[in-house]
Length: 215
Length: 284
Image (cartoon, rainbow over all chains, first blue to last red; front, side):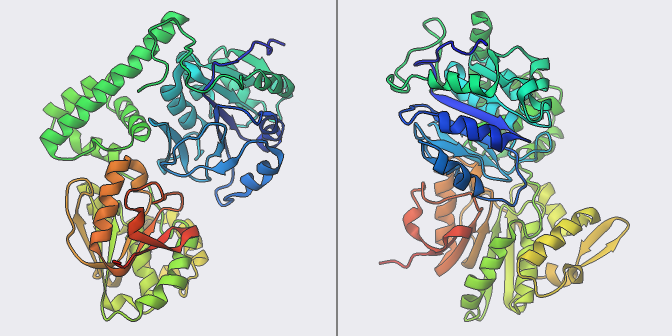
């Protein structure tokens, strides 16, 4: 396992995408996020469209961090878990603030993981951690590759351990992520997230002179 | 890898420069104002437009927008067209029936503004609801959009018949008092909306970014339009709604939209917060 590399101080935002088998996987990961986490967390989970806030009720009791359904134009607060509402894409805009869209589904999905990941990669660049979990379609592969290209950190759940392997497997076909981990490896990685360094303290990952987040 | 990251960073910055130049060009040449459209959604739409038109960069797209007049209407579709549904979010329409309709009965005549009507699904849904509630005969619905092609489609009122099953289910869940099939005629794979509804709807060109108020109305319904605007443009649009609404008039927005973060929040009171239905606050 290659998951013990520390992410201390490197991450302002975490995006997580999951589909079939995702509730189970998220039930492992979200409770592992430490109470003092400074990064904001954004989650897209494919769901039937008529189930509004059930996820908040499922995850909030298990989590140390506040869990909310995303609202349009809401300013991003550190240490908060935002869930994409059913039937809307979730994107991130300068501010940073949340942005929703009712544009067409991508990979038959709205919310789509690609849409979240690509907009997050655009905004947070090297200070983003993207995690792609279990799922039975190809959504997320392109978005995770975009995070990698922008210099962010990417984690793909090991297809062998995933409830549905297609989503992680299509991502691995497309690019080489920073880490391929079982769920418990991802939990360990999340625990290395620095809790002492305030978000946006300016320690860029890349060489000096790189834009860390777009102004 | 660091070199690649640097290239990616530069490309993202270039895209932003080109985006600004393109929306300025569109504004100067065609007077459509996309300068205050929210960044990330706009970027996605522009990226898919680039693919569609075979342009490697936004600068190439800008060149074609300026020099090929026939391209602009097609680009406008990418930037504006919304695929909506009749009775999208049935709970919204149910809330209108339960909480707004009883208060509307006191008005001798009604005017409704559907802002950003796209291909007309929302306007026809409201017309059907008002017909079912016995109010349509004294109602005029203004349905506005910036896309002339979408307005033409809306005015025609012709939908793919395959979409009607989903619309019918939405309608049923909205507290329907009749059958949706009472309001359209199906033939050759198309469903044509009834003329009796159409004569209560005026479709017209109006921009929330550049135009001003045109009528006093009792209801504004503007759902999933504000999400594409940045905050300043949202404030402008909500300001127009407040100005257009009569005393204690009603505003409905999309179920995941909020006026909480807007400078106009104080102009409205909650009526059905869960369904984002507000009432214009009376002046103190």
